[in-house]
Image 1 (cartoon, rainbow, N blue to C red):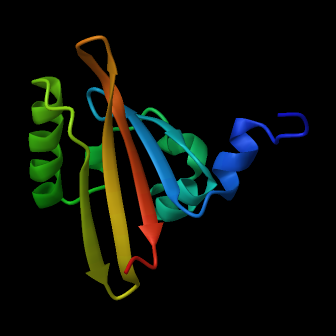
Image 2 (image 1 turned 180 degrees about the vertical axis):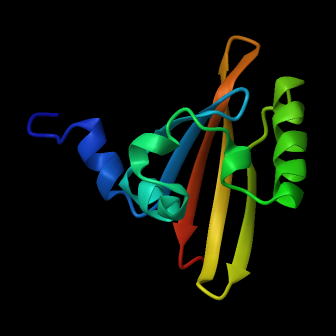
Length: 115
């Protein structure tokens, strides 16, 4: 499509935070909304290469580890849930990314203002 904006332009204007990790939970990509969401953990450039454990509570990491283990064992079903706190509702969708049968990483989409 001629005149179509590039991928980064679109990702930065997406109405959702996008966070990508490798198979071990190391952050490899954040769009602008993802950078904003995790800003309390440091500037964007300091987030890349960090483990999700640096940005989540220990009890949350138990669930994240279970999900990653399930993905590593071939369960390709995306996960989703709605979370509500003082900031409002968010829908979180986690999608595994594979290279053949091997888990390459996980893409997470966090949508604010969820129903």
